[in-house]
Length: 329
Ligand code: SF4
Image 1 (cartoon, rainbow, N blue to C red):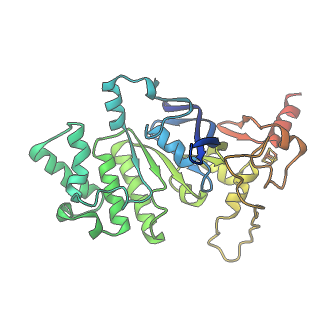
Image 2 (tube, rainbow, N blue to C red):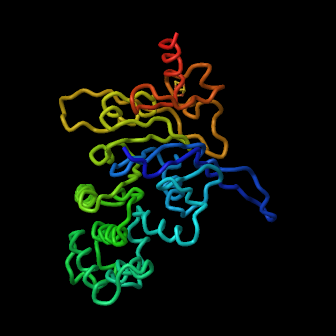
Image 3 (cartoon, rainbow, N blue to C red):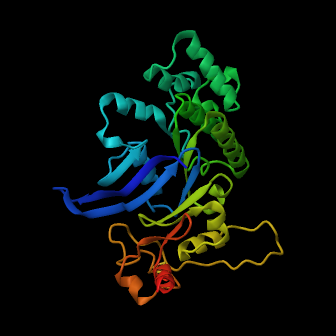
């Protein structure tokens, strides 16, 4: 598979300042040494609890945030070292759909102007062609042509998210970062928006990074899934491997929380102890050790490395360091 984006050892530390002189009280390690690839045409799901760094990662990939360290390569080129022209192309090629469709749409602009704006900025079409393209995009996302003269407050949450999607695809991007695009919507609307994203992926040959809170949302839309915990990527695998045979204890706990539609099916829920520790002062060794039922002495001291244990299934956990060492002997 062709690699569209390479993320290498990405870090984002936010300084914590307090007091009259704004003295630095340390750093919130929102993303701490995360690496993965995004392949052309796939949907990579990225999941984890609030504050695990998944949205910060997404924002660095679209150049909305500068990384503290690490590289993001799009089609082999480092996005921070592009010339002015390539930077403009990059902003066209990588788009983002935000979680809150209302906050991401300018309340003073009509829907038609909101969808037309990126095409005007990127000088894709103008005049009558621009009008025609806006109507076509409204049609693609399931809205009517008369909606173009309305304002965001006149729409429901699901319709506003459709507008956000139309705006994102208007410039014919290659990669779209979907930052929790359905978590603010009713469950009945969530499925419609997920189906729409799936149809548009086929129609426009799109690649998605799909960020979500829980594994149940990404289950039906992702080809591969990465799981983040407290700024670290702890497991990444093809979706069927991850759902049928999760390796990391955190992934196992997240999966056990997904409700089963069969009332007779017995499923043991893994309840995690305590709260997520502060990213200002993360635990030593494995960051999950304070909540892990399988914690060993080494887990408190040494950070586990990401190892590929089966084809395209990688996990960062000392349980698998040990088993691999046995196999190698
Ligand atoms: Fe649990 Fe240790 Fe694995 Fe961390 S490294 S997930 S603490 S077993």
